[in-house]
Image (cartoon, rainbow, N blue to C red; front, side, top):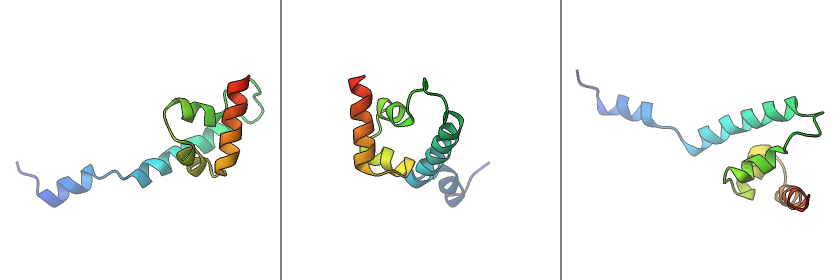
Length: 78
């Protein structure tokens, strides 16, 4: 059985934008669940620990770069 090239390429394409969209949905869901939980780790700290840049975290969370930077600094000083 052969698979034509166009069909194979369509199934293999997962762009960075698609992954960012999925991550944004997961972040939104998590933020809603932990809203009142003072003990839960901040989402931006988890994303930073996973290796995302401040720019990426800000984009995914819909926050400003400086807000994420300050949040990470505060979490490190605790």
